[in-house]
Structures are given as structure tokens and as C-alpha cells.
Length: 137
Image 1 (cartoon, rainbow, N blue to C red):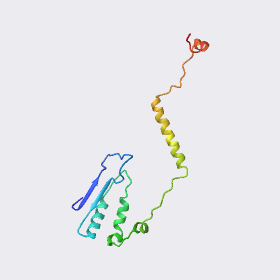
Image 2: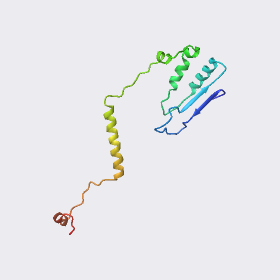
Image 3: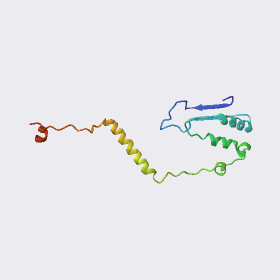
Image 4: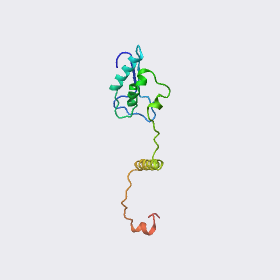
């Protein structure tokens, strides 16, 4: 990464992200003698920064640090709202039904594995069992 750059990383190649994880899988801190130096350095680092297999905010960070207001230091607290479109994505209308069905199928499949194979071939019943029931006296 170079001098005046700190890179902290929890993820590595082949690592499976657990269900309960810290959303910050990696962090990069950059410092320098002035704003222009830091923005230039982080812009170059973000061009080469790459993760595969997961969705990251690296493309957004590239846009932010490439924006003239950040480069010149003239941004304010409304910078993100005024310069980027963030829309709330609503789940489909049938999302709850689909999740309920998926959960039911998962439970069913899990229980089937625990039960083992079921034999659908019936064994012939002897005349003794038909007449008496269980065949016991």
C-alpha cells in the first residue's frame, strides 16, 4: 500500500463471511502533508482496490473522492444527499409469502434428512395377520 497508508483487513481469500459479522471487513486510512496529497493518494489506491465475491462500497468511494467538492474541500453535511441518489428498495409484495415458503421447505428438508429414507414398498401381510390382527396371542 505504501507509506502513510494503514490498511486493516479481516477478510482473506477463501474466507466465508459468517452470518454475524462486522460490516467493516476492511479499512484504509491515508494521511499526508496536505489535503491534495491525501486525496490523490486515496484516489490512486481506490483505483487498484478490488474485492470479489461480495458487494462493497468501493465504487461509491471512488465517486466521492473523485468529486470536485471533495477534492477542493468545499463539501458540506448535505454533500451525499445533494450529489448521490439513494433510493430505498422495497421488497416485492409477495416477499413475506416467499420467505415463509422457503423456510417451510428448509424445515421439511432438514426433517427428512433426520428421518432417513422412507420405504414406499409395502410388505405382503400374511393370512394370520389379516385374520387375527397383529399375529400375537
